[in-house]
Structures are given as structure tokens and as C-alpha cells.
Length: 79
Image (cartoon, rainbow, N blue to C red; front, side):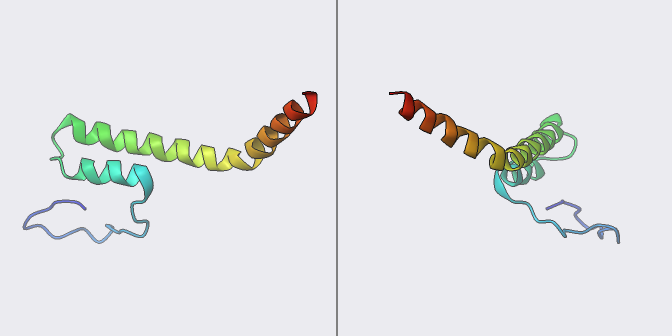
């Protein structure tokens, strides 16, 4: 994803974790812009924030879904 024309990649460069999801799409778009544009770095930071909130949502899902179902069922029981 990184552009280094006529330069080899350093030995520490790797793609062991491929881009995925909405954050990956944002990062792919950021990599299309040159490194010296502020929008390149801002989009990369936005991709990090989207990835963080996605992780947090996945972590909270086992707690939130049963509570939502319980709230829904208690609302039906009151009627």
C-alpha cells in the first residue's frame, strides 16, 4: 500500500494484518494521497478511531443485546 518508487522496502515492513472493514477502506483512501498532505495523516487517524469504535462495539455486543431484548420483552409485558 505504501508508495516508494525506486526504493526497496525496509526489512521490518510487513503486511501481516491486512486492511479490513470501514477503517481499512479509509486507510486505503489515505494511502492514495501523498505523505506530505495533511489529509493523508488525518484520514489515517480517522481510520484508527473507526477501528477503535468498532472494537468497542464488538466488545459491548454480548452485554447490550440481552439487555435490549430484556427491555423489549418487559415493555410488551407491561401492555
